[in-house]
Length: 329
Image (cartoon, rainbow, N blue to C red; front, side, top):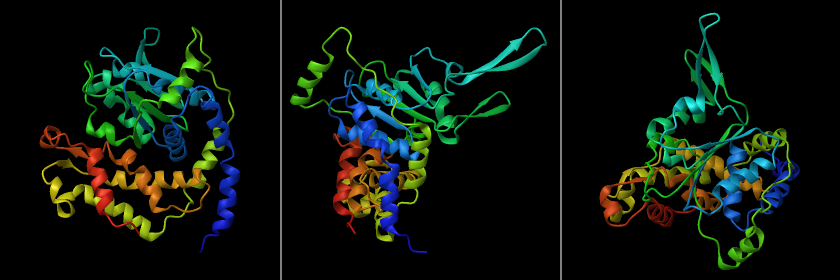
Protein backbone atom coordinates (compact mmCIF):
# COMPACT_ATOMS: atom_id res chain seq x y z
CA UNK A 1 0.00 0.00 0.00
CA UNK A 2 1.53 3.37 -1.03
CA UNK A 3 2.52 5.66 1.84
CA UNK A 4 1.02 9.16 1.96
CA UNK A 5 4.22 11.18 2.33
CA UNK A 6 2.36 14.43 3.03
CA UNK A 7 0.47 12.82 5.90
CA UNK A 8 3.68 11.26 7.21
CA UNK A 9 5.48 14.61 6.99
CA UNK A 10 2.67 16.21 8.97
CA UNK A 11 2.98 13.59 11.72
CA UNK A 12 6.75 14.07 11.79
CA UNK A 13 6.31 17.81 12.33
CA UNK A 14 3.92 17.09 15.21
CA UNK A 15 5.99 14.39 16.90
CA UNK A 16 9.30 16.25 16.57
CA UNK A 17 8.09 19.40 18.34
CA UNK A 18 10.18 18.49 21.40
CA UNK A 19 13.47 18.48 19.44
CA UNK A 20 14.00 22.28 19.27
CA UNK A 21 13.05 22.57 22.96
CA UNK A 22 15.74 20.08 23.96
CA UNK A 23 18.21 21.66 21.54
CA UNK A 24 17.66 25.10 23.08
CA UNK A 25 18.20 23.77 26.60
CA UNK A 26 21.40 21.98 25.61
CA UNK A 27 22.76 25.11 23.95
CA UNK A 28 22.27 27.00 27.18
CA UNK A 29 25.33 25.12 28.46
CA UNK A 30 26.98 23.82 25.27
CA UNK A 31 28.34 26.30 22.73
CA UNK A 32 28.35 25.17 19.08
CA UNK A 33 28.78 21.40 18.48
CA UNK A 34 25.66 21.29 16.26
CA UNK A 35 26.76 18.04 14.63
CA UNK A 36 27.27 16.41 18.03
CA UNK A 37 23.82 17.48 19.24
CA UNK A 38 22.15 16.14 16.07
CA UNK A 39 23.88 12.80 16.45
CA UNK A 40 22.81 12.50 20.06
CA UNK A 41 19.22 13.03 18.89
CA UNK A 42 19.77 10.31 16.26
CA UNK A 43 20.85 7.87 18.95
CA UNK A 44 17.81 8.73 21.06
CA UNK A 45 15.47 8.19 18.11
CA UNK A 46 17.01 4.86 17.11
CA UNK A 47 17.48 3.31 20.56
CA UNK A 48 21.23 3.30 19.91
CA UNK A 49 24.39 3.92 21.91
CA UNK A 50 27.03 6.59 21.34
CA UNK A 51 30.80 6.66 21.79
CA UNK A 52 32.24 10.18 22.10
CA UNK A 53 35.97 10.50 21.46
CA UNK A 54 38.07 13.57 22.06
CA UNK A 55 40.80 15.03 24.21
CA UNK A 56 39.89 16.12 27.75
CA UNK A 57 38.08 19.42 28.20
CA UNK A 58 35.79 19.37 25.14
CA UNK A 59 32.52 19.09 27.15
CA UNK A 60 31.81 15.44 26.32
CA UNK A 61 30.63 14.67 29.84
CA UNK A 62 28.78 17.99 30.10
CA UNK A 63 26.91 17.15 26.88
CA UNK A 64 25.54 13.92 28.34
CA UNK A 65 24.59 15.54 31.65
CA UNK A 66 22.86 18.39 29.82
CA UNK A 67 20.82 15.91 27.77
CA UNK A 68 19.81 13.95 30.86
CA UNK A 69 18.58 17.13 32.51
CA UNK A 70 16.13 17.82 29.67
CA UNK A 71 14.39 14.44 29.98
CA UNK A 72 12.24 12.66 32.55
CA UNK A 73 14.66 9.75 32.83
CA UNK A 74 16.83 8.14 35.47
CA UNK A 75 20.49 8.98 34.95
CA UNK A 76 23.62 7.28 36.29
CA UNK A 77 27.27 8.07 35.75
CA UNK A 78 30.10 5.52 35.91
CA UNK A 79 33.66 6.73 36.23
CA UNK A 80 35.66 3.95 34.59
CA UNK A 81 38.92 3.29 36.42
CA UNK A 82 41.53 0.49 36.29
CA UNK A 83 40.23 -1.04 39.54
CA UNK A 84 36.53 -1.10 38.52
CA UNK A 85 34.87 -4.54 38.58
CA UNK A 86 31.95 -5.81 36.44
CA UNK A 87 29.85 -6.30 39.58
CA UNK A 88 30.25 -2.59 40.34
CA UNK A 89 28.20 -1.89 37.21
CA UNK A 90 25.81 -4.81 36.90
CA UNK A 91 25.23 -5.89 40.48
CA UNK A 92 25.90 -9.13 42.31
CA UNK A 93 24.43 -11.77 44.62
CA UNK A 94 24.60 -10.98 48.34
CA UNK A 95 24.57 -13.76 50.92
CA UNK A 96 21.82 -13.43 53.53
CA UNK A 97 22.86 -15.08 56.84
CA UNK A 98 19.26 -15.04 58.11
CA UNK A 99 17.96 -17.67 55.68
CA UNK A 100 21.19 -18.85 54.02
CA UNK A 101 20.11 -17.62 50.59
CA UNK A 102 21.69 -15.33 48.00
CA UNK A 103 19.74 -12.23 47.07
CA UNK A 104 20.41 -10.01 44.05
CA UNK A 105 21.68 -6.49 44.54
CA UNK A 106 21.11 -4.71 41.25
CA UNK A 107 23.83 -2.34 40.08
CA UNK A 108 23.54 1.26 38.89
CA UNK A 109 23.24 0.12 35.28
CA UNK A 110 19.47 -0.13 35.83
CA UNK A 111 18.83 3.40 34.63
CA UNK A 112 17.55 4.96 31.39
CA UNK A 113 20.61 7.00 30.51
CA UNK A 114 24.09 5.75 31.36
CA UNK A 115 27.22 7.87 31.15
CA UNK A 116 30.27 5.61 30.89
CA UNK A 117 32.90 8.26 31.49
CA UNK A 118 36.39 7.55 30.11
CA UNK A 119 35.38 3.99 29.23
CA UNK A 120 38.85 3.18 27.90
CA UNK A 121 40.43 3.74 31.33
CA UNK A 122 39.27 0.26 32.39
CA UNK A 123 40.50 -3.13 31.14
CA UNK A 124 38.55 -5.28 28.68
CA UNK A 125 36.68 -7.41 31.24
CA UNK A 126 34.92 -4.32 32.60
CA UNK A 127 34.20 -2.88 29.15
CA UNK A 128 32.79 -6.24 28.08
CA UNK A 129 30.44 -6.27 31.06
CA UNK A 130 28.28 -3.87 29.05
CA UNK A 131 27.93 -6.16 26.01
CA UNK A 132 24.75 -7.98 27.05
CA UNK A 133 23.20 -4.80 28.40
CA UNK A 134 23.85 -2.82 25.22
CA UNK A 135 22.67 -5.48 22.78
CA UNK A 136 19.92 -7.42 24.57
CA UNK A 137 18.85 -4.67 27.02
CA UNK A 138 19.16 -7.14 29.87
CA UNK A 139 21.61 -8.18 32.58
CA UNK A 140 22.25 -11.67 33.90
CA UNK A 141 23.19 -12.00 37.58
CA UNK A 142 23.69 -15.56 38.72
CA UNK A 143 20.99 -17.67 37.08
CA UNK A 144 18.48 -14.84 36.65
CA UNK A 145 18.10 -12.37 33.79
CA UNK A 146 16.77 -8.88 34.52
CA UNK A 147 15.33 -6.56 31.90
CA UNK A 148 16.67 -3.03 31.71
CA UNK A 149 14.32 -0.01 31.58
CA UNK A 150 13.09 1.43 28.29
CA UNK A 151 14.59 3.59 26.97
CA UNK A 152 18.11 2.41 27.79
CA UNK A 153 21.01 4.29 26.28
CA UNK A 154 24.75 4.16 26.92
CA UNK A 155 26.75 7.27 26.12
CA UNK A 156 30.44 6.55 26.60
CA UNK A 157 33.32 8.98 26.46
CA UNK A 158 36.93 8.12 25.74
CA UNK A 159 40.20 9.91 25.27
CA UNK A 160 42.33 9.08 22.23
CA UNK A 161 43.96 5.67 22.46
CA UNK A 162 47.50 6.97 22.09
CA UNK A 163 47.29 8.74 25.45
CA UNK A 164 48.85 7.20 28.53
CA UNK A 165 46.74 4.94 30.74
CA UNK A 166 44.10 3.86 28.21
CA UNK A 167 43.04 0.49 26.82
CA UNK A 168 41.84 -0.35 23.31
CA UNK A 169 38.11 -1.16 23.26
CA UNK A 170 37.37 -4.72 22.06
CA UNK A 171 35.95 -4.99 18.54
CA UNK A 172 32.75 -6.61 19.85
CA UNK A 173 32.26 -3.68 22.21
CA UNK A 174 32.82 -1.10 19.47
CA UNK A 175 30.28 -2.77 17.18
CA UNK A 176 27.55 -2.26 19.80
CA UNK A 177 27.80 1.51 19.42
CA UNK A 178 25.49 3.00 16.81
CA UNK A 179 27.79 6.01 16.35
CA UNK A 180 31.36 6.91 17.16
CA UNK A 181 31.55 10.70 17.22
CA UNK A 182 34.79 12.59 17.19
CA UNK A 183 34.52 15.77 19.23
CA UNK A 184 36.81 18.49 17.86
CA UNK A 185 38.12 21.73 19.30
CA UNK A 186 35.71 24.70 19.06
CA UNK A 187 36.18 27.53 16.61
CA UNK A 188 37.83 30.70 17.93
CA UNK A 189 34.52 32.61 18.12
CA UNK A 190 32.86 29.68 19.91
CA UNK A 191 35.70 29.48 22.41
CA UNK A 192 35.20 33.17 23.16
CA UNK A 193 31.55 32.41 23.98
CA UNK A 194 32.62 29.51 26.16
CA UNK A 195 34.92 31.88 28.05
CA UNK A 196 32.03 34.26 28.73
CA UNK A 197 29.72 31.42 29.79
CA UNK A 198 31.99 29.26 31.90
CA UNK A 199 34.80 31.38 33.34
CA UNK A 200 33.36 31.60 36.85
CA UNK A 201 33.85 29.47 39.94
CA UNK A 202 30.23 28.24 39.69
CA UNK A 203 29.13 28.14 36.03
CA UNK A 204 25.48 27.41 35.28
CA UNK A 205 25.37 23.94 33.76
CA UNK A 206 21.84 22.80 34.64
CA UNK A 207 19.12 22.23 32.06
CA UNK A 208 15.34 22.17 32.53
CA UNK A 209 13.19 19.13 31.81
CA UNK A 210 11.29 19.83 28.60
CA UNK A 211 10.44 16.38 27.21
CA UNK A 212 8.76 13.24 28.52
CA UNK A 213 10.08 9.76 27.82
CA UNK A 214 6.84 8.88 26.02
CA UNK A 215 7.45 11.63 23.46
CA UNK A 216 10.85 10.20 22.57
CA UNK A 217 9.40 6.70 22.22
CA UNK A 218 6.62 8.04 19.95
CA UNK A 219 9.23 9.75 17.79
CA UNK A 220 11.23 6.51 17.63
CA UNK A 221 8.16 4.64 16.32
CA UNK A 222 7.65 7.26 13.63
CA UNK A 223 11.29 7.07 12.53
CA UNK A 224 10.65 3.43 11.58
CA UNK A 225 7.99 4.57 9.07
CA UNK A 226 10.28 6.93 7.15
CA UNK A 227 10.76 5.72 3.59
CA UNK A 228 14.01 4.42 2.16
CA UNK A 229 13.74 3.93 -1.60
CA UNK A 230 15.30 0.81 -3.10
CA UNK A 231 18.13 2.74 -4.84
CA UNK A 232 19.10 4.30 -1.48
CA UNK A 233 19.01 0.86 0.18
CA UNK A 234 21.27 -0.45 -2.57
CA UNK A 235 23.58 2.52 -2.02
CA UNK A 236 23.89 1.69 1.70
CA UNK A 237 24.62 -1.97 0.98
CA UNK A 238 27.19 -1.06 -1.67
CA UNK A 239 29.06 1.24 0.74
CA UNK A 240 29.26 -1.40 3.46
CA UNK A 241 30.03 -4.22 1.02
CA UNK A 242 32.86 -2.15 -0.47
CA UNK A 243 34.39 -1.77 3.01
CA UNK A 244 34.84 -5.57 3.04
CA UNK A 245 36.07 -5.84 -0.54
CA UNK A 246 37.64 -2.44 -1.03
CA UNK A 247 40.63 -3.73 -3.01
CA UNK A 248 38.28 -4.65 -5.90
CA UNK A 249 37.24 -1.00 -6.35
CA UNK A 250 40.20 0.73 -4.70
CA UNK A 251 43.51 -1.01 -5.46
CA UNK A 252 45.33 1.66 -3.42
CA UNK A 253 43.86 0.29 -0.16
CA UNK A 254 44.91 -3.31 -0.75
CA UNK A 255 46.36 -4.78 2.47
CA UNK A 256 45.21 -1.73 4.44
CA UNK A 257 41.82 -3.01 5.71
CA UNK A 258 41.88 -5.80 8.29
CA UNK A 259 38.12 -6.04 8.69
CA UNK A 260 35.17 -4.32 7.01
CA UNK A 261 31.86 -3.29 8.54
CA UNK A 262 29.44 -5.97 9.69
CA UNK A 263 25.75 -6.30 8.69
CA UNK A 264 25.00 -4.43 11.91
CA UNK A 265 26.75 -1.50 10.26
CA UNK A 266 24.39 -1.76 7.27
CA UNK A 267 21.34 -1.81 9.53
CA UNK A 268 22.58 1.06 11.68
CA UNK A 269 23.46 3.24 8.69
CA UNK A 270 19.91 2.86 7.35
CA UNK A 271 18.34 3.46 10.75
CA UNK A 272 20.48 6.50 11.52
CA UNK A 273 19.68 7.95 8.07
CA UNK A 274 15.97 7.62 8.86
CA UNK A 275 16.47 9.52 12.10
CA UNK A 276 18.39 12.27 10.29
CA UNK A 277 15.49 12.61 7.83
CA UNK A 278 13.12 12.84 10.83
CA UNK A 279 15.18 15.72 12.28
CA UNK A 280 15.00 17.45 8.89
CA UNK A 281 11.21 17.03 8.78
CA UNK A 282 11.29 14.74 5.74
CA UNK A 283 9.32 11.55 5.15
CA UNK A 284 12.09 9.91 3.13
CA UNK A 285 15.85 9.28 3.23
CA UNK A 286 18.16 10.88 0.68
CA UNK A 287 21.64 9.68 -0.41
CA UNK A 288 23.05 12.79 1.28
CA UNK A 289 21.68 11.57 4.63
CA UNK A 290 23.64 8.37 4.13
CA UNK A 291 26.83 10.24 3.20
CA UNK A 292 26.48 12.61 6.16
CA UNK A 293 26.37 9.71 8.63
CA UNK A 294 28.69 7.18 6.97
CA UNK A 295 31.75 8.27 8.94
CA UNK A 296 30.05 8.22 12.34
CA UNK A 297 28.43 4.82 11.74
CA UNK A 298 31.39 3.09 10.07
CA UNK A 299 34.62 4.60 11.45
CA UNK A 300 34.71 2.18 14.42
CA UNK A 301 33.62 -0.81 12.32
CA UNK A 302 36.31 -0.62 9.64
CA UNK A 303 39.55 -1.88 11.18
CA UNK A 304 42.84 -1.06 9.49
CA UNK A 305 45.97 -3.21 9.38
CA UNK A 306 49.30 -2.47 11.05
CA UNK A 307 50.59 -1.60 7.60
CA UNK A 308 47.94 1.11 7.29
CA UNK A 309 48.81 2.49 10.71
CA UNK A 310 52.48 2.61 9.69
CA UNK A 311 51.52 4.59 6.58
CA UNK A 312 49.31 6.96 8.57
CA UNK A 313 46.08 5.70 6.99
CA UNK A 314 42.97 5.49 9.18
CA UNK A 315 39.38 4.37 8.72
CA UNK A 316 38.26 7.96 8.19
CA UNK A 317 40.36 8.24 5.05
CA UNK A 318 39.20 4.86 3.79
CA UNK A 319 35.55 5.90 4.18
CA UNK A 320 36.32 9.07 2.21
CA UNK A 321 37.71 6.93 -0.62
CA UNK A 322 34.75 4.56 -0.56
CA UNK A 323 32.24 7.43 -0.73
CA UNK A 324 34.14 8.99 -3.59
CA UNK A 325 34.06 5.78 -5.65
CA UNK A 326 30.61 4.28 -4.93
CA UNK A 327 28.08 5.76 -7.42
CA UNK A 328 25.42 7.94 -5.82
CA UNK A 329 21.83 7.10 -6.94
